[in-house]
Structure formats: structure tokens, C-alpha cells
Length: 489
Ligand code: GLN
Image 1 (tube, helix red, strand yellow):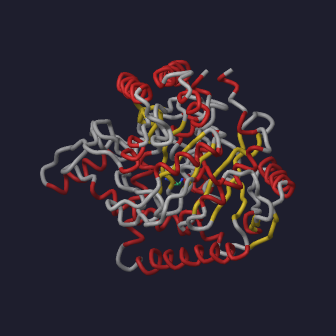
Image 2: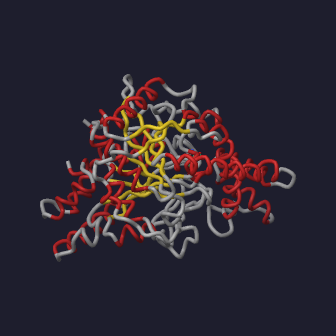
Image 3: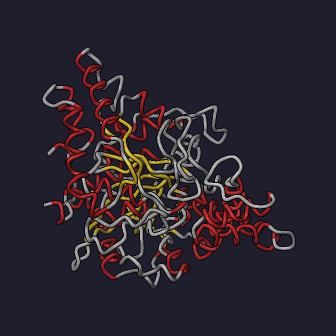
């Protein structure tokens, strides 16, 4: 079935006219019909529009267009509900935006379209990307295709589950503290968070502007490289995007990683690490040695402070960013006798409990008297965390860690305990604070039940080529990425 194939496999078949773009979209739509009732990765999609885009791609292919000029021609890419697509709903997994329709395309969407992609569907997420399980969506749970009693991770749970369940060939998500890598790990796909500044955030609804990045979810590392090459690059509409040339990331996937140095951080050997996750890590270390990489012990001494620092900075920025949802400019307004009452009624009714918790926390750490004690101090610790990584990268080319301390947990297991939920981000959060890049790849399974385990590679600022190369070499020497959830058989 075409929906099970990768971008690179489908590209070859399209180029040789063996298949049409319409057939690819039809096969994804059929899969959505078969499984999405159970998984609920999609908030909405427009089948007619996707088929019309496919027909246009088929026409272009018939007229001689090639994948050399348009690398994603005829390939459907699903989109997290936090990225603006013109004329489509944009709700950020929240009720507060009502029936808002985006008036413009995010830069990444323009780039996908220029590359010929079929931009398709709105994928479920934790409200405003706040969460690690997609249980904070205002529109219901997304379920993990490997075990539908479990969560797919978050906040980009829909983007991960859609790829894992073969409902989509690839998707985009956003990562502020792990929201691409953590769900990719828990659903058994590849998820990449680019270096801060690599990909334009224009048209990404802001959660924490100094941490947010858009990145791909794919079935293998090569597809992540392909998609990253398309969405990267400087953009005058996002002043934080950096004028650094965009390489052809797939050219780096040679399989040869001899002599590359891989760091293991002693601070990541934490007590709460699941036994099977730890065993998968050890096996991966052996595998990398076999492939010719050199393993080096490193220290990231400020690791203990990462979660606390993140939840100060991210909530502070969120409290400012979410002030715009006031019932005046957009959103489902609830009227009041005066503006203050209108604001509080609109925001009281529109935001869910986790978003409210974060706004309150963020407002508190920014308030007079507490700003220096919390926000300013967190900024200083953030600098130390970044410096830890820069020091480590003097010695190593990348750092290897588990992506998450455990495999996917049960729906409902952590909803009453926000702190437990926050701790599931322990390995992913530092990467955003440091502004570096990271990728999660399939690294094995737990035994019973069979659930995916993710491995994370963290790279230097703009070191995407190195982590992709390392990820690809591991992937092609292991079998994990080829396995599919039992419910799909
Ligand atoms: N789980 C983290 C949080 O709740 C990260 C979210 C994200 O990366 N968007 O904030």
C-alpha cells in the first residue's frame, strides 16, 4: 500500500510514472478511514482539496516537472494545528479561537507548496502546544497506534500518530521543549528539532518564542533530511531566522560515521530511567561502536536545573504571547459589561486548565518583586546550560541520550499530576534551552506490551548534517524503523 512508503520511495515511483499523486492521496484517505476513528490524529481534513492538489501535481509531472526542481511534488504532508495554512482552520487545539480560519500561509507552508507538496489536514495537539501527551487538546485524545490505551506523546501527538499509523507520509510539528522528539519516540517514528533560527517561525502560533521551532516527523531519516532541506532557510518575516546556507541534507547520509565522536552524559543516567529504555541505550552504544564511532564520556553539569528553568522561561513567554487572545481581535468572544469582564469571561471560557496554569505561573515569575528571583535567574541558568553543551561539543560531534525516560504511558496516568507530566520532558528540554538541534529515532521496543523506545542525538548549533548522518547509519544497521503497529496488520 502506497501510504506505507516513504517520501523517497514514492518519489521514485512518481518519477517513473508507476503511480500517480492521486493514488498516494487516495491510499492515505483510505487509511484514515480505516484507523482514524480509533486514533484521532486528525482534527479535520479536506479530502477534495487534497485530491485537487494531487491532480495538479499529476498534471505538472505529466508536463515534465521533476523532483530535482520540486522535491516534494505530489507528496502529502500533514500539518500540526498550530501552523497557519491559508483558508484552513487554525485552532491550536484550543476552543478559544472558535472557528478561526487562517488568512495566510506560514513560511514553511509556502516552502512546502513551492516544493510541490500536497498540504493536507489539521493534526491534533495539546492546547497551544502545552503538554506531553496530547491530553490537553480541547478536541479529545489522540491515541498511540502501538496501544490505543496509551498516549502518543505531545504536544505534537497527532503529527506523530498520523505518521506511525501510515495515515500520512510525513508531517510537520513544533518543538518548544520536546514536542517533536518525545511523540516521535513514543510512536516509533523519526522526529527532528532544528537549531533555533534554522526554520522560520512566521505563521507558527507562538508558545515560547525563544524556544519554538518547526520540524518534520517522518518514517525514516532520509525523509527527515529531505523535508528539512525544504523548510529551512532565512526569512525576512522572522528576524530570528539565520542567514546560513541550507545544505542538501540527504547528501550527508553516507553510512560512514567512522571516527565521529559521540558523547554520553553521566547526568542522564537518572534513577527514573526505565530498565528497558536503559538496555536499549546500552545496545545503541555498542552498535555505534561497531559502526566505528568513538564513545566519549561528557558532563552536562546543569542538567538538574533544566526542567525548572524551562517551566519558568516557557511560561513567562507564554503568558505574554497568549495575551493576544483577548476576545477583541480574534477568538470566540464572551461579552461582558466592560472590557475587563469581557477579557476574563472570554479567557475563562476559552482556555483549558493547563493553559491557565501556565499563564498564571508565567505572570507570577514576571511580576515585580519576583522577576529577579525567578525569570532573571532562569535566564542565567539557561546560559549555563547552553555553555555546558558548547563545552561538550568541543570534545564530541553529538550527544546520545534516550529521548524519554519511559515508553508511552497510559492515557489518564499523569493528568492529575502536572509535575510528573513535566518530568517526561527531562531529556528533551535542554536542547531548546541551548538552542541546539536534536533528532529522535526508533531504538528498540519494550517487550510486553510492545512499545517503541526512542534514541536522541543532540547536535551543535547548525549541526543537523552530523546528527542526520549518525541517525541514518544507526537506522540502516538496525531493524526498528521497519516495524509497524500491530493494529495496522
Ligand atoms: N511538554 C513540554 C511542555 O509541556 C514541551 C511542549 C512543546 O515542546 N511544545 O511545555
